[in-house]
Image 1 (cartoon, rainbow, N blue to C red):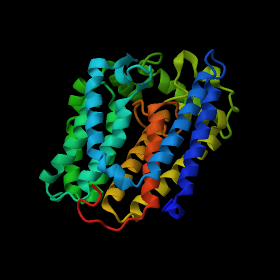
Image 2: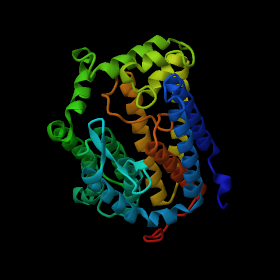
Image 3: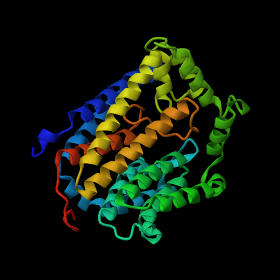
Length: 369
């Protein structure tokens, strides 16, 4: 394969190690339950699908994928629009669609992460007048339409991950910091509107429980209190692998999904938590280095957006475990249990590897489709 000599094996290794670590703790947290084989088995199947997707996505020149940016974006926005009509409801949210005749479910909002970043990269690579506020309106619309549809599900956590990706890509594309500051101020001013019209009672309860977990200790504050107790009890080296599963899963604690970092910190202690942080730091250092060293605009913008999105997701997930961020329901990339979300993480890693292994010169407008 052309460009294989530039393939970033370190980035791939961190993906595999994080995925293996996540699967181990998914088993640790669920093996004592009646469905003990379902979660780790399903996770392994999704990892296999993710690896296949990684090979395919990384194997095709990313210029070809760039040509599909706008059609892919349109398909995903259409799927998001269908969720309120045909979506499957669970946990007070309507976020999943079922593929006809297959019984398989997927979450369009997860696929939107890749589609939006790809569409933004294609628009911004040779966008003009980004030094003017009016030039920011088209990329704001590209990101804002799917964000609005996702907020309506309601899914505030997933909608928020588009914000750092958009900001980072606009900055790299040449937008002025002053204008980005105005956008940030406008977003803060819109917070009351999001609070009353973009968030359900459960999501508002997560915010209030972040401020005061004891206000509803067995309701909205339950997960946060359990998470903090799990992390604190882990100490330096933890209580031992698989030692705390019955305690952590009491009353449905999400120790294998959103709060898997709490499970790791409880069973492997400070050592386990630092191990995860170091692997994530290595992954992002390699990803942002690929973005920095790419001379071709689409590749640089694409990898910047993908890495900013995954980094924000990681910070928020670990932060909510430690009560540094409100609980938003975002997963820890490559580690948390999940189907579509895990597959999307592998696709993001594949696109980053794709750009890194194909060092293109600066191309003229239209050269990438």
